[in-house]
Structures are given as structure tokens and as C-alpha cells.
Image 1 (cartoon, one colour):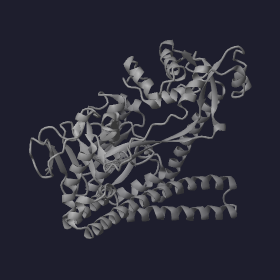
Image 2 (cartoon, rainbow, N blue to C red):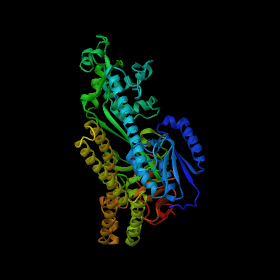
Image 3 (cartoon, rainbow, N blue to C red):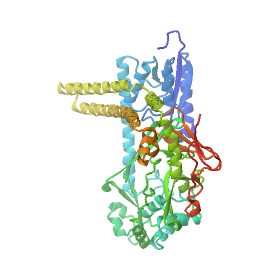
Image 4 (tube, one colour):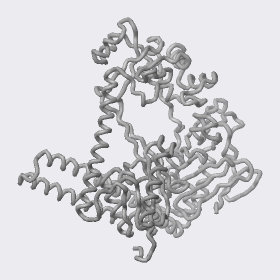
Length: 598
């Protein structure tokens, strides 16, 4: 708690929720200017001005808000100021949590549009205003959604969505026109698939050879984009009779009986975007996750668009040709010790993919590699690491480094304990304390619910008022239950770490040190997962090996790494060379040796 003699210090917080506002900066500047004027009147010393550009107020997972909470936790902050209450957070339950958290450090949460004061009546006033604001936002979102549905049912394109390749929006921005130059590329794709019978990979190679750029301006087309083109009804010509079964009569009345039309589908899926924070290679990182849930077919809305000019026979033949076309497995019928989230590209942070080739001249001998999928799919502009890492020798080198750690169980125990404490420390609040806070919130909501029901029974409020208040309480309860579920998930994560630690150490107790050298690949992989191992490549050919141990390991090259190649070779000359035993440093062998990276 700050002393009464300490200076009055304030943190100014400003947030905008859209990328457009973030780029202009006008709203942020306006908010901060108003906050400076407000803070100057009572003589606050501004400790820091914190901004959250392009961040949603739907959750507390924001870089700027994390900074504010860290500053408050350090002590000495009298007040955190924002222009409006919804700049802090849009959800009243989160506002309640934030206010209680700051009160523990003697810090107040204030907005320029606060209507109440610190009295219970003042808090009630602000709470009601928060609920009204939330209600208005929900109504606005619902009106927007209904407006889009109505527009689509009227046979109009929703301009806010991306435009299908080969089309452009008309002047009114509510319909499509054919872009002949781009549509020629789409026709070429259907021709190669439906007439020439080429595979998706063959089409991809042909477009690359013809130097045709992708819709997003990249050199290499993905087979997924090609497949989506072929399966999209916007390119398939539909007769007037077929369209009549999909659209409303008033939309059909505007169509030409003799013409054909493509179908642009709206409302096919529900999209929800959330933001979470994770501890990454460079510290705390914020990632937006988009969840797309398919809607029932009867909820889809068909919008007729001009015919793309692709013959119906081409479309049907192309779809038939790729119907059973699925990417073959890259596993090569082997256990990949560094797959499933262990081996990462240091340039683009993608998980490394597996690749297997065979050489007919060697009797079908297989060669196994790890490589960056982003580089292979999108080219050098997307990722500079074009190396192919020979699986057997790479896995042997990594195991040689890690097995040395496993041979010292006492040090490993200390390292695992430190990792668990670090994970526990990454939680902003005491999980038990925060769980109790949200549980109390649920209990308080239930008490209010019973009280409202009793008031309705005594005719103190109408049933219309009761229904409105119960809906509000249900929203609050849903938020609190979601937070309790998230806290339980974090607790289960910690419990899982402790279980893995105990299992790992128990296994090591029962295994002789010399037996570690002959463990099966799947057993090595299991050890890696328990150690939270992460192997990262660097452009200079070195590897970083990190995990639940005190010092990261580095695998450094002497000359050319024996398990690294610019291309996956399949000729007899490409048989991987035997590298020197672990711990040697012969430059003739081109081997890699483990060392401490520090």
C-alpha cells in the first residue's frame, strides 16, 4: 500500500479497437490529450501513458493492459485514468475484476464518463450504465448482422467480405462484375484439372512455371487455394431453374431466363476471433485465434452473380478429378522423433514438416528429411531457410545432447522444478485467490437472482423487469463461469507439468544410463515431450535446443553439417555420410557437437 505522503501518480490509458483507428492515431491522441488535461487539475504526476492500438476490449489479454497491471502491481500508483469506462474493458464482469485487483494496491480505476462515486449507490449507477452500454453494443451488432442477412436475401453481395478472384465489385458495391484478366487464370485452372486431367500439384507447378501470381501476390500457389477454386459455386454456371430453387422470388424476378449465373454463398460459417497471450521464444506474445464453425446448410443464403464463363463440363470434370485426391502421408512409415511441435524453423517459427523420398536406383531406398513447409510452399520471400535436414543424423545429434542431461537426474529435477515455478509465476494473480474471487461473483449473482424472484413474487417488480434482470445476470454468470473454466485449465496445465516431472524422473530411476543409448524412437519422443523440448534452426546451420533444463543447448557446426542439405537428394551419391561420434570435433567428419549455448 502506498504511503499517504507519496505523490499522487496516475497512469493514462488509451485504447482503440480497429486497425483503421490504430493507423490514423487520431482517437488515441484525442483520448490522451483529454486525460492529460483531467490529470493536471488535481495535480497528478503522470507516471506513464499506455496505449493499446487496434485492441479489442472484449478481454483483458492486451499488451497495454498487461503493462498497466504490471505498473499497478509495482506500487505507488494512485489512479488509472481512461476517457470512457469501456476503454478499460467492455465486459462489466472484467471491470469488476480489474477494480478489485487494483484496490489491493491502493489504486483507483477512473474514467472521465464515470457518473457515480465510491459509495454503493455510485457503484450501482456505474454498473447500470455499463450494462446499458453492453446492451447497446449487442443491439448494434445484432442490427448489423440482420442488415447483412437482409441484404444477402435481396440478392446483394456484402462488400465487407473479400472479393472472389476473377471478380470485382460493381460501382454500387453490392454485386459482382467479371474481371476478364484474372478470370483467365481461373479458367486455366479448371481446364488443367477438368480437360487435361492434371493433379493439384501439377497445376501448382504449371502456374509457377508460367509465373502466375496468387490472389495475395505470392509466386507459389497452394494446392488448398486451387482446390477451393474448383469447389466454389461462384465459378460454376447454374441454369435459371437451378437458381430458382435457391433464391427468393423477388430476386429471381430480376434475372434473365436465358442466362446462367454463379452462386455466391453468404452465412456459411460463424467466425469468432479471440486474443490470448503465450510465453514464446521472445517472451510474452499475443496471438489472435479465429474459430470458424460451419452453419447448417439451410442457413446459407445464395446470391446470384454473373457467370464466370467456365463451361459446366470443365467444372464437373475438375471436381470429379480431385474428389478423391488427398495429400499422401509424409511420414514414410517411420517414427519421427522431432515431429508434433518439437522442431521449429528459426526464421518463420513454423513447425518443421517431414519429407520422404526414395531412389529407384538403390532398390527403392528411402531418405527422410525435415524441412520448413512455409519455404517449400511460398518460396524464399516467405522464409529464407530452404535447407533439408537429414532425419536420422539430426535426431541422433539431438538425442546425444539431451541424453547427457537425462544422466543427471538431480540436476534435471531442479530444472523441472524451476520450469514449473516459472509457469506458475507467469500467472498474473494467485490462481486460488482469483478462483475464489470469481466463485464469490457467481454466488453473488445467484443471491441476486433469488432476490429478484422474491421481489417479483411480492409484486415489487413486474415480470418484464424480472426477465430483463435475469438476462443480465445470466450474462454475468456466463462470463464468470468462463473465467473459472480458464483458471481450471491453467491449473490442470500445471498439474500436468508436475505429473510429467514425476513420471520422467521415475522412468530415469528405472533405466540404467547405458540403456538410454538404445531407447526406441517413440520412447525418445516421449522424453522430449515431457522435457517440453524445442529445437530451433538458424540460418548459419546451428541448432538451439531448449527445454526444461537450466541452460539451453546448442548444436554448432564445424564446417558443413552432415545432416543438412539444400535439396532432398535421392541419388546414390546422396547417401548420408556417417558423422563422428558424439563429443568429437573432427572437421573431416563435418559433424556437429553438443555444447552449452551460454
